[in-house]
Length: 114
Length: 114
Image (cartoon, chains in turn yellow, orange):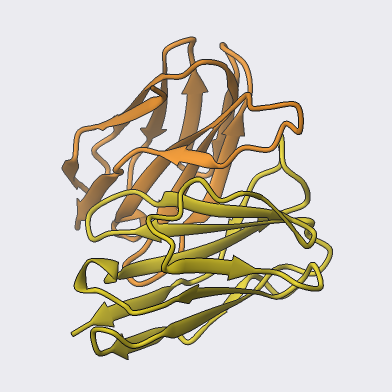
């Protein structure tokens, strides 16, 4: 079946611009996670949804970062007034539920802020 | 603080030269340990989940084992196509909802030379 998809795959933004990154999880997956991955590092948690509810946003680095999943499927990560330190790969993952189920990752969106 | 440390950072092997990658963890309560493979420009690909000390799982040339403090990913007679970054992640016991994100190590970059 179809895996997790993300768009765009690459995004170049000028400092100060707003960006929106989209994630389409695997159909039927209840849980959706966003991670940020810097070059040469492992992914770091940003936020988590169970259906449409955002249960944990403790990893969001600032109030410029905002995520939503209004209908419990597609999710959007929005970054306002982008800064150079926001440059990274943003990964989305979904799983059947939290707890013991493995998370399946999308290909990521590489954001470059110039 | 929950921590995951992977070693070595990079490993270069000749084709057919078996070796092991290490993942040590310090967490408040382990719910599961995950191994992922990540190729350049792609999202992490799920390999294994281990839940309890003594557990082992195998897939082709890979075998993952778990103790109370660490996990090993053994690679037997590797081939060039096994070249990738291997990520270890832990799923810790969380709050009443049981839903917590994965905590990743920085990964081991494996290069297998023909």
